[in-house]
Every structure is written in C-alpha cells, then in structure tokens.
Length: 120
Image (cartoon, rainbow, N blue to C red; front, side, top):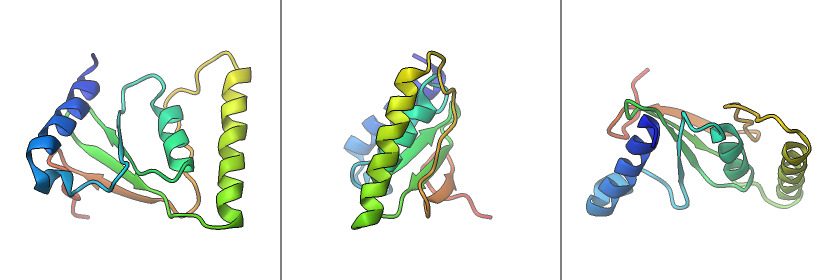
C-alpha cells in the first residue's frame, strides 16, 4: 500500500465513525490515492459518470472534484466521451499516467488533511 492509499483508507474508516466527517463528502464520492498509477484514469471515469472524486495525497491533503450534473443531450455526450476514453485506453498499451480529464463545469476545491476547504 502506498502512503496516499493508506491516507484514503484512513479517511474512509474515520468517516464511518464520525458523521460530521462523512457529511463533508457528497454521496457516491470516490476517494482515490493520488499516487496510484491509474489515478488519472479512475478519476476521469468517475467524473464522466457524474460522481464526485477526492484525490488524496500522502500527507492527507485532498483535491475535491465535483462535476456538474448533466441532463439530457449533455449527459449522452458525456457518456459517449467516457466510452471513447475507455476504448482509447484499451487500444493504447502504455498507461495514461496521472492525467485527469475534467468534464465541463467541474468544481475543484483544495482541502486540508481534515477535509476542510483551504482558504484562498
């Protein structure tokens, strides 16, 4: 287990015991270790499906990404984009690395190790 994986697992376990901590994350939030080799692909896939993503770094800091909920034709285009990205990743042999492709109007928020927004 990598340091970021340990930090993300600890956040999930702490959220079970602390309802206030769990309330800081929207329903269906994916906590992804930022140092995982496929973190970019995992985050992109979740965001294109409309799920929030928290990239957790080894020191516990977070980057919370919340996509705008698409409706109608926009939702169909996002699903098509997700399918094309999946197909492209299957055709390419090398990993995409840690690149995250954000859907339009994704809200990005930096948070400290307690899950609280960092003041600008």
